[in-house]
Each structure stands twice: as structure tokens, then as C-alpha cells.
Length: 328
Ligand SMILES: Nc1ncnc2c1ncn2[C@@H]1O[C@H](COP(=O)(O)OP(=O)(O)O)[C@@H](O)[C@H]1O
Ligand SMILES: [Mg+2]
Image 1 (cartoon, rainbow, N blue to C red):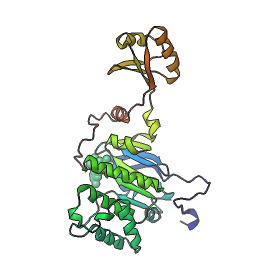
Image 2 (tube, rainbow, N blue to C red):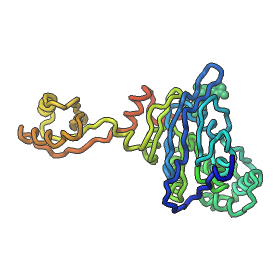
Image 3 (tube, rainbow, N blue to C red):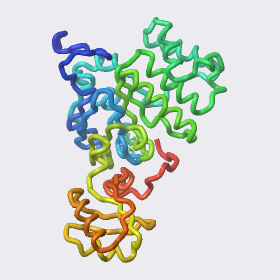
């Protein structure tokens, strides 16, 4: 490795040259004995994205993140973090990355601030302003002198995230950060993640909660049984099948009418609304046919296929909702 091979890329860089993705994972594989926990996983995390790493419990999310961070040796494959190869340039990658993959050890009898000071000391960070900055970023300045043991679950989790922010990292990797939190605590974490990205960072958020990923992520990778199922821009992963929603005055008559139109793949009546699966280029002609046949069309719009449907179709998981985590 030479210094010339490892360009230092800073946040806020206004250089016109396109910057490499925050992360490129390439055919990463991890076997535990005969069991393949991560099976040739590849995905790319664009700079400045909130990247959802979505999969049911046991899918291989933590193992993948652990391998990327050098906590678990890879069986094969590689990854580049901020353009540094994890096999040959891990220290350079980790210097610019903040991660919370396992719950950090924090002392209940010490204040939040003193816990962070200790972390900073152990990490060799002697800049006291970093502790204060991290406290502010997780919105704990007001409660920094209270004992960690007196914190709510959400506050404890936020202080854990603060440990990952001490180095002012470009990239933040959070493994299921909302696990065990009530809806208010989950919202606070989402607000925190949005702030981190607004400040120019890239955030990876692993989750088994669809609604969470749907709500804040710009990009997504779905993993199940150690295998990559889909990845890309959220909108692309959402819109894998075109359909339109149509509201008409006589839905029971419109249903058989629509079914006999060529190009219409499927029609379903959902709460009085027709959901018509058809290439979006046929939207206009379908509208015209309905009107010509005497139907009163009051609403017609493209339907975003919910990631939840996608997730269910792709993983076959029967437990899509935010069911409490029972593993990890
Ligand atoms: N050290 C290990 N030894 C053997 N199997 C493991 C080990 N760590 C994880 N696994 C298995 O690998 C699979 C993926 O686990 P994990 O990465 O923790 O999934 P997730 O984080 O998506 O819930 C699970 O079946 C888990 O039991
Ligand atoms: Mg996990």
C-alpha cells in the first residue's frame, strides 16, 4: 500500500470528480463450518445515502457488517469502505467510519458524558470538543451529567450511537439501532439519522423493520438466508411492477370490463378501489375506454408497490410487521 493509492476524501469536498461510493461489497461470503451465513453478497452504498440493510432475523446482516468492519474474517470476497480495501487498508477505513454493531459497554454508575470521555480516551481521541459534539449530535447535552443507569432505553441507545460519532466519521454503520425501542424512541433515532446525513455523512442502517427502512432510507439492499435478494434506489426497488389505482362510480361493473381489456394483467378490487396491473403506458387508453363505456372515473393514479409487498414476495416471510426482535 502506498499513500498515493489511498486518496483522502473529506466530507464537504466540492471537487467535480465523481467520488467513489461509500461502500462497495463484492461477493462477500462467510461460512461458519458447513453453514453459509453470508453467501456471495454484493451491493453498493452511494455517498450521502441512508442505506437500509433489510432482512428478517438471522438473514446475515450482522455477520455481513462484522466482516466489513474486520470483526469477523471473511471466507471469501471483498469490500471497499470509502475506497479503502478492507483486507489491506482496514485501519484507514476504520479511522473514517463509526459503527455500532454490538452494544457498546457503558457504565451505569458513570454519567453519559464521563462514559463518552472514557470511550474517547480509550480510542486515543484527546479532543474534548468531540465528546461535546457527539453529545449534541445525539441530543443528550441536557442529560449528559445524569448517570447512564438512569437513562431511558432510547437515551441509552443514543449514547451508544454517540460512541460511534466520536471520530466525526464520514460513514456511520448502525446495526438495528431501534431494536427494543418504543415508537417514540424509534422516531428519535430516525431524526438523529436524518441529521447525520444532512451533515454530509453516509449512514447504513440495518433493520428487520420494513416501515422503518421505507420511511427514511434512500437506498436499500434486501438480504435473506445470507443471499442478496434486491438492491438499489428505494424507488426502483419499490416500482418493480407497474400498477394503477382507479376509482370509478360502479366498481362491480368496472371489474369485468377492465378484465377483458388487452394488456391488463390483473384487476383487483381493494376497498372500492380498482388496482389494475398494467404497463403504465396504457393508463391513458384505459381511462378513455372506461369513460367511453359510461363509467365516471374520479381518480386514477400510479400505485407505488409497497416495499412490504416486495419484501413478502421476495423473502416469503410471514412476519412482515415490526414484531419485537426475538434473536440477536
Ligand atoms: N459465530 C457464529 N457461528 C455460527 N453461526 C453463526 C455465528 N454468527 C451468526 N451465525 C448464524 O448466521 C446467521 C446469520 O446471523 P446474523 O448475521 O446475526 O443475522 P441477522 O443479523 O440478519 O439477524 C444466523 O443463522 C446465525 O445463527
Ligand atoms: Mg443482527
